[in-house]
Amino acid sequence: MRLSLSNSDTRTEGQIWEHYELEKALASQLKNASSSERRVLYTQLYDELFSKLPHHPQFQRKSDPSASATEIERKFNLVKRYLKPDTTFVEVGSGDCYFSFHVAGFVRKVIAVDVSPNITHSQTSLPPNFELRISDGCSVPVPDNSATVVYSNQLMEHLHPEDALAQLGGSAASLL
Image 1 (cartoon, rainbow, N blue to C red):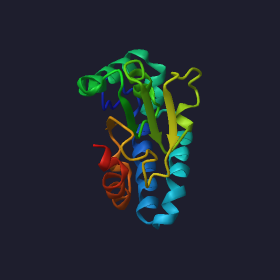
Image 2: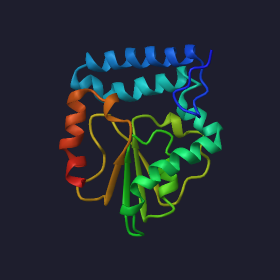
Image 3: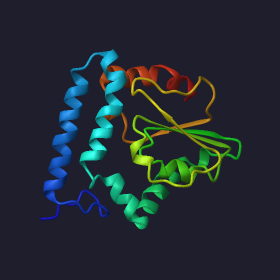
Image 4: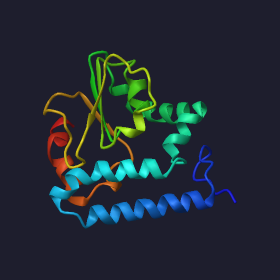
């Protein structure tokens, strides 16, 4: 049986259930970890997620250019009015970085921030104005007042509540 969460999601019901159960287990580990444990746990857990779920939606989009283009265009329509040639754009929780790669064609600099470098490994050519920064999940490794536009999508629900507040109250909040 196919259960579709979107037109581009071709996973079976079993694969979606497997994804849900794994995310739930990872979230439980984060919820029960101390602040110092979480500083290394985010990268470990999301590397585990991507290695155990070859059918993860981010991998699906990589293999389906049409789905990827649709998702990029949807996001781009939200931010394009804020982008100028001299913009420094930061995407927090960039995942596969395809959106950041697209935005790089319209701005001076793009900084993609994520906890796992594994999802971007298959990318062979990076835009010259692109930089990937690996976060510990507890902070946003971007200096205060160094970005013009900060964007994030589908990130907060993956963070421990204390880390979400720290990200919003720290550097990220001063950039908004």
